[in-house]
Length: 147
Image 1 (cartoon, rainbow, N blue to C red):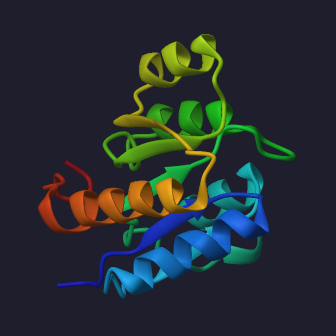
Image 2: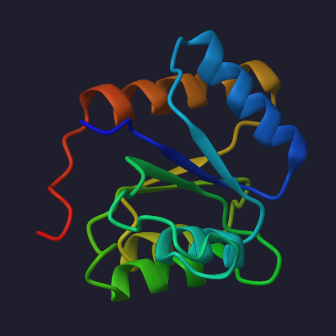
């Protein structure tokens, strides 16, 4: 059985570090692959660009996806994931600071599995990441790749 990977799509270095720290503190030692924008995320998932040659059969267990990203936004990443048979069922949690109702509605319309607003306070953010990590890595069941 392959290790469950977390793909964190986040351009804020403070949020990246806090997420990694919280996961370590929760004893979630899974590899965290960080994509700092939508292009990097898509390159990783589809084995393109700097990730050319990567075994794309090994998908992450969950994608934690920010919406407000440089180059390609989170909604466009989600749209591309759901349009491709290989990633259509990949669990995607939108983890964003956006309070826009339109972002919430469009995320679900495009197939997000969950939508979590990033709490402003670091302790609340840590609690949210801890809970997400436990649920999506320990309790959630995902379909086999390619099904």
